Structure formats: structure tokens, C-alpha cells
Amino acid sequence: MFALCLLPFAHLTADWLAELGALPGWRSSLGPEQIHATQLRTGLWTLRLLAITLAITPARELFGLSALAKYRRMLGLFVFFYVAVHVATWTWADAGFDVGYMLEEVRKHRYILVGMLGFLLLVPLAVTSTKGWIRRLGGRRWNRLHRLIYPAAIAGTVHYLWAVKKDTFFPFVYLGLFAVLLGYRLARTVLERRAPAML
Image (cartoon, rainbow, N blue to C red; front, side, top):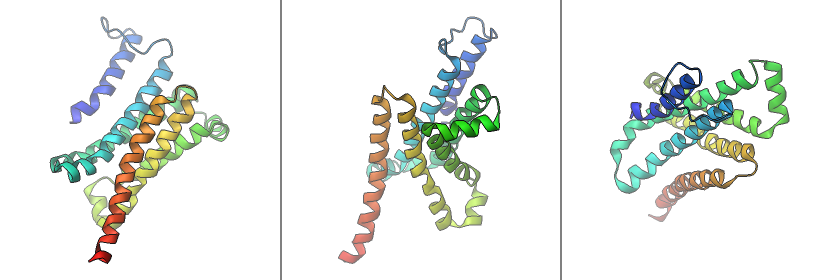
């Protein structure tokens, strides 16, 4: 699973090495706008892995695939890995680490603002992903904190939707997918709260 999650990054690295002439024989698929392609790829893999991570709970509960639960933390960390590369590409290639410029871009462009919000929501989840943090926070508080993944998923999808502007088919596909995954959790919570009252 670790190797599978790294494959998109390995492909991206090979493409960049080919662009730099360091990997003869490899044909880069980045195209003429390499930075934009890098941002798009890393952003899409963030959303894909986020969707897979959120799909583990319904897959486990509805289809008895309990073995998937052991991969959830790893998948969540790879979500953060790809979003971190996505943000780093923007701060380095587009903004040149100019903090003033970045703050101005966040203020001017709503898709950057909501994207940064999604990224910031994922930071505490990555930091507290260890067993030590689970012990420090306690299971209940840790679970409550990690519900930030839900608004992060929404923010990431809205970021994608607002960034593409015209070709909105795939952003709406992701939006629908996350709506189903979050709707399942909401429905389950409502049913669990009603169950004691019906007994």
C-alpha cells in the first residue's frame, strides 16, 4: 500500500528528471506548463486519496472489509504528503517564497483562500496521527479533532471547482462523491441517536 501511494510521486519525479535531462529515455508527460501540471496532479491525488480514506469506514461497515482499517492512517498521511507538495509547488514556483505576495494572492483569489483553509485543517491531523498523540488527547478528543477531515474535503473540492472555472465536470464528481461519503456518516449518526429512543 505504501508503494502504491508513492507511485504517483515517483511518476512525477521521473517526469521532472526527464525535463531536466537527467533521465534519458523517459518521456515526460508534464507538457509545456510543467508547474501547472505538477499542481494539478498533486491536487488531484490529494482528493483521490482523501476519498479513498473516507471510503474505508463505509466499506468496512457495509461490506465487512475490516482489514482496510489498518491502512486508514497511512492513507491519511499520504493525503497530507500530496497536499504539502501541492502547496510547496505554489509557494516555491509561483510565489518564490515571497510571503507578502502569497498573502496578497490569498486575499485576492477565493480559490487560493479556501485551498489554504483546507490545507491548514489537515495540518493538526497529520501532527496528531501518532499513537502517542492518541494517548495524550484520549480517544474521544482525538476522534473529535480528526473530524476536521470532513470540512477539509469540502474545502479541497471547492478549491478545485473555483480554480478550474470552466471545465467543472470532475470537480462536481468529487463534490458528489464527498457528499455521499459525508452523508453516509451523517445518516449513521442520526440513526445511532434515534435507536435508544426507539427501544
